[in-house]
Image (cartoon, rainbow, N blue to C red):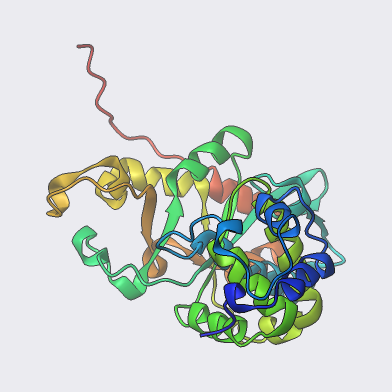
Length: 297
């Protein structure tokens, strides 16, 4: 089950915060450092745990694995013909840019690790279905219209990563539990410090969990929105009841078929190696004539 930070010696908890350089900008750290150093952390010093783990924080580990493995195993093969520009520190749509001759293929790396059990309601096989955020795709079209998503598709990775993380003890085990349950003001920077430290100490072990044979699949933001436009049922967050759920859903992902609607990264890499960036951009920008409803009332 891993470490429960509430059972740890308060001095060890504060020592863990100090080791990972998580300062009092995180409200939980400030509260703990300001409390009495007695045996066991007084419940009054911590916010309510809530009912669910912070999945967004825990997903950062699999996301970082995808970014690292894609850079080391795949983008590195394009050098030195292409310059690989990192963008992660800028916290924008792009994680990397493949650049040459004034052109860029902008890339956002993701990890698809959860089976969407209800995919059949939208005409998809759960094992052939990955989600793309409709909001993020729409935002990308406005800012980085040629953006492609590169997804590491591995529905076993989440469980393997959790096994490693739940097995951590000491400072990293304490903070894994603490950050999994507690958020609040300043949590994002605290999470970033923690993830950086985890990969500084355990990066090769975590990277090795990714499949040896490439499972990276590519789809452009433009195609995601085209799929949404053609088949709005693929996005339950639009509140379409036709799928038979009988209720609106807060989900805002567009669900796409891995086999039919994404392309293996190896195929894109081969095109880049043989023909350059322009043909890839032309595939992303491809259009066709079709009749569209244009009601005037």
